[in-house]
Image (cartoon, rainbow, N blue to C red; front, side, top):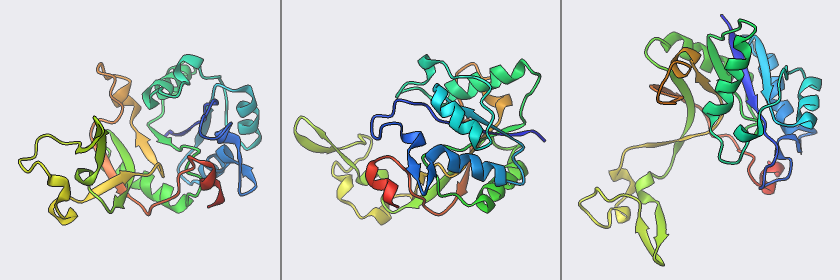
Length: 224
């Protein structure tokens, strides 16, 4: 079975300059994802998708393939996952390589346990006939119904379909249990999104529950 790990590492981060190569525990951030992929007993190919020559050289140093540079127009702040994943798959089709599944390992989640990754891969393979993708999630202690936004200088809820206008004041136990995507390990089936005409990536999503792990988004997160 061809199990490909894609590590997305665009340049141009605004929260932390060159975030994906900033040092974390003595190594560039993206290196942690490469090394855990190399340690996996299931992943048999690792590709770094980046738009930067500097990132490319660092990725190759730690053992990833970097057979292309990602186009700038799909390396923007608002670019979608499906854009660079499809780009990678289309590039690999030229060498007649079509992965059975893609394991997405974002550099911003560096504290992974390889046993959890392999467990997730096996779990998805066991259920892949029923699902198009898998997303790792952690239990979240607040439901989305408790969240508020500011509109016209007033605090208001996000949901208009509740009979109770102040539903956000109700106890959280009144709402369904909530799970937050955590970036630990996400898996996709290329034969779903490569044939999809509506540009969907996930389709039917299998939940994979893991412990919460820190996400590197701001400078303070680098101290964890």
